[in-house]
Length: 504
Image 1 (spheres, rainbow, N blue to C red):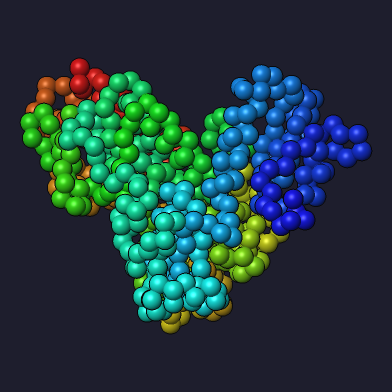
Image 2 (image 1 turned 90 degrees about the vertical axis):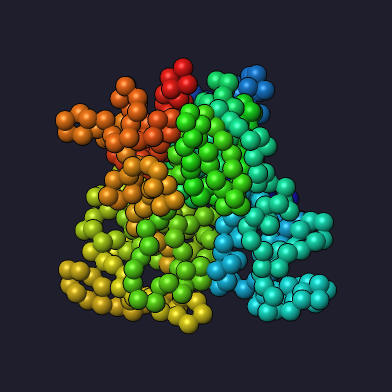
């Protein structure tokens, strides 16, 4: 296939080949086909070798022989692997094209939206692609009217809003019914879990998402400590699987749709959307998650989306090929991004305020970073300024121990410095702590075990119930939650049990 310049999606090799081991073959093939997925076929005696190859990042999956029946033991695994490859595959002739220059914040917004909703697209750089100029001339447009999104049917939108793109792509942007048993705001791991468990147990469930399924976890390049996935999976893969599962049980998902306000009318709860439409329900689950905390340094506000980015997805990593990338932060999300970027960038420098990665990062990530030669870790270091006219050109950093200050050339700065709850829109209705996280269950009770103000029921609030009966919260947005994917999934499923108790 390589002779004809066709992409290689998947390579499968048997570990017990006569002259060359399968792991050696896949190791060599990685240099030839870096984007291809790799599966090792093993016997039970080869399990340790397979785990070693996974830890070294050389294979994506292993299958134990024999795989009979293939309908259960082989084909589903191949389908998952190939679907994951297809999501990140960027063909030279894709149906959907976006014309803009690299440093356009609007291109960044549109590209992230398409990537997170798993819509393949081709970016045509107006500065380096003559075909981009020809397309604009064909459409009677000029370079002042950017970005331009061209759809498979030949139609196009100029400088569109995300909702316009979603409508053209026939994404579901509005609820089908006026009333549901359960409305879930936010489609991170907690919201998706609640949709799966709620719909599977007979509740009519609507999930409202303001950007794309997966929440902040959906931006993770690799989640390696989630139970049941020994080779790890990306946040996008986890979201894709969960969406299919939720829709299979009958849950309805609308995106991008922003919830702006909630109302309580007796036993009914209502969600008012950004377009002023209203949807009503018996119970409401707030799983609206968190947003990355903003870095407050001189010069940064005008460069967001033009070299300065909060979080990172696969599409940003590809743009940074053979460049020097800087990452601010020392927790798991920063570590996962650093490892992923290292596959594309010339170098990845982590700027960490703490004196060690061990303070906030899991051991398995620290081990991988230590064994990745093009990742540099600068501890006791913070960014104090960023510079650039139309895009990021350099950053100024300081070492808090030596007080040494440096200004370094930089075109890509990715920031992972903690999170803030997405709760400004509901603070008038729901009781939150001083940082904006939603209080639930025991945290609503006073030191004298008094119920929260305006609580009308004789019983105490359920564990995940907010200050308003019938409105629950789960995941990172909740006060005291454990900021882990598995914990959020657990809270989302637990919320459905408590919702059944409330409805009963």
